[in-house]
Length: 178
Image (tube, rainbow, N blue to C red; front, side, top):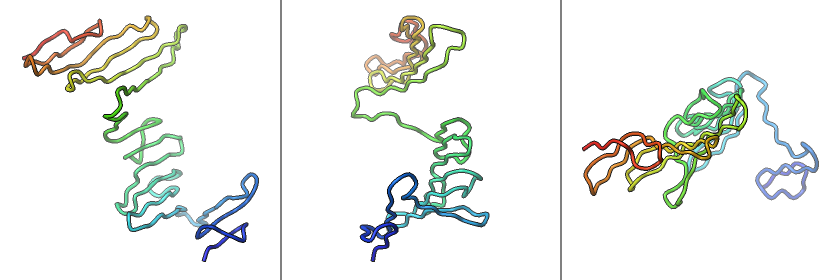
């Protein structure tokens, strides 16, 4: 049967019901020095959300089937994916994908605070592929009316060469390598 706290007709295995601020809370306390944990076990895998399993004073999302912390928020507020010790506000330890192949445009914007005065500086890095094979970065500087620079390379299969280098006009790279 179902167990209800604050309700006579629970609709799940355990239902905590309340009205108002903090009146429908579930608290898990470990009075000892070990962590407190919420386990989610099924035939598809076993996961947990716990505090301080592998790192002191942290919130961890663990894949218990693999005995691995997959994501962590440490006490400084830094978030790590694939690492239990993020070295920045956000750190992804391996590859990251932004966007999807079915999208025509994907953009990652990184903004920087201009401490030297007006106008505010914005730094933008756009990774673009050329002819489906390109590797490159466009830099856009908003303080110079949107001026762009390209740095990277692309392969032109029909011509049998790589374009490698830097182009201040935002067009093709300056150096051809066969």
